[in-house]
Image 1 (spheres, one colour):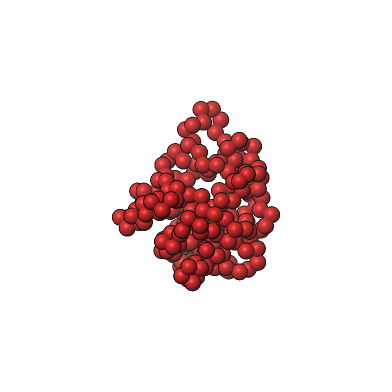
Image 2 (cartoon, rainbow, N blue to C red):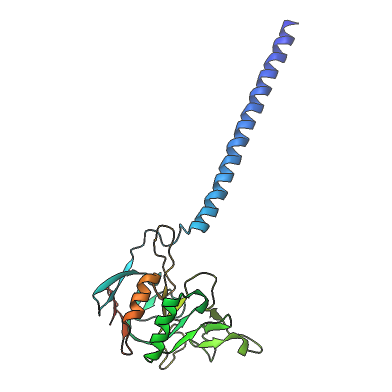
Length: 240
């Protein structure tokens, strides 16, 4: 009789401990899983994985001796630039045109862009129909296009009308356009940099990125003879 009671008591204790352990384990697992989901959401929302730990590059505005932080291609600077290699091309490039989102410019910025147009720069407001072809098999490779102009097959392209702010202002550089050589790289711009909440600059796919304040300073200093010199070494990019 006593042994039966003792065995029942032991079984009850073991059962309670097991359920306590499982409940605790379940809570820990649920909390861990919730924390993991929250971390992933924050990672995307705050853009914490945006080139963290990379060394920022420098751009120098020669006319005013100002130096700005800027971002370059994720694979650095190369003289032998190729399509899709993630590198910024080395060289000395003229400015071909300036594209911008009119709906995202304030009155002062719009005034600056109009002044640049009066100075002889080609300045054009973007529309949702605008793209830049990066398809090496297309006759329109490395050219600005109106997407709706293609009645059938649309060549692979980059949309210039974006939800983010990277292309609110685009300074189109004269790279691989005179003449255009297929596979040598396309859509090389100076545009707004991607930054996370810590103002850390993200890398580009080959363009040069500046924050808006600095890019507006560059626009203010432009002349029709301004070029963008990208050295192959670690020196600053010269806006001269």
